[in-house]
Amino acid sequence: MKKIRAVAWKEVRQVSRDPLSLLLLIGLPAFMLVLYGFALNFDVRHVPLAVQDRDKTAASRDLVSTFVNSTYFDLAASPAPGDDLERLMETRRARAVLVIPEGYGADLAAGRTVPVQLLLDGADANTATTVLGYAGALVADANADAIRRTVLRASGRDVPAGIEYRPRVWFNPELSSTRFLVPGLMGVLLMLTAVLATALSVVREKERGTMEQLRVAPLRTAELIIGKTLPYLAISLLASVLILVAARVLFGVEVKGPYLALFAATLVYLIGALGLGILISTLADSQAIAFQGGLLVSLLPAVLLSGFIFQIRAMPPALQLVTYLVPARYYLVILRGVILKGSGLGPYWDQMAYLGLFALATLALASLLLVKREA
Image (tube, rainbow, N blue to C red; front, side, top):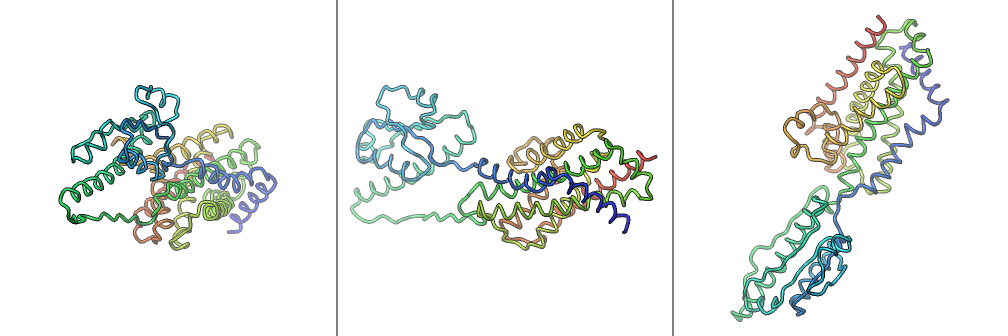
């Protein structure tokens, strides 16, 4: 225990002498959370809408009001018949164009079907799909109201209301993408900083020649690894606290579940990340290579293959198999469950088992490689 304490104290003193690295480990995750938390947003609101109203009746104006008053669309232009609608979307003055034909009001009053056209800018497929869903829901509501009024006028008596649709969204009632993304950002940033911190610290010892002194010291490989990782584990836990505080203050994302469950999951996740950093440092001989390797195995998989942004079920089957090797995949499930749903670790015991297996595998493999290097 004394040997581990000595190695850990040496690492603490080394980090304290390099305030830039300390700021990088503690301040960078919080800064990146603020930056990406505001920049990354999948919510689609205030879409510029051009309306070509060829009918100019009260019914057509009601339909336009339905779109504009929904807050999903903003009236950006009112092109006349014959205007170049394609040019409007090429210049990005409008992302969608609603075309209301002549005779819309008369046909609607007579109970006849009226074709209404919506032109969409499909360059951004995700946004176009979302806008298409919004428009379909708005038109369906307007259509139901129109049918009800027509039947009421024709029959002269009240019409049964029918089905009243009352959707209720749990855990994220506003359907805010920020509440979905911020926990994911925490997993990505912790993986990145923990891997890079340990990888660069060990490689720095190699470049300065002090690694040979550690190897000839009466230290076991496990004692060396534990002593090197303990300070960075403490720093990473402090960074996670700062991230949670920033998420609460700036984005209103509060932890609804038990903090002990969140701490346990974060601890196991960070141990695996630190073990991965040690593993990279045993293979790299320079800080440049260690930095590039750390980015390659931490940032890219955590962003692309963890379910942080892209749904794993939508990926090709071969790529879905690769995601089982990404620890962020399991951590994000736990993180969103604890933070957003208020769950404990009970429903996520299998995710915790995967994280624990990953931590043991990386630490064991790093120890084996260090022993081989010493031999």
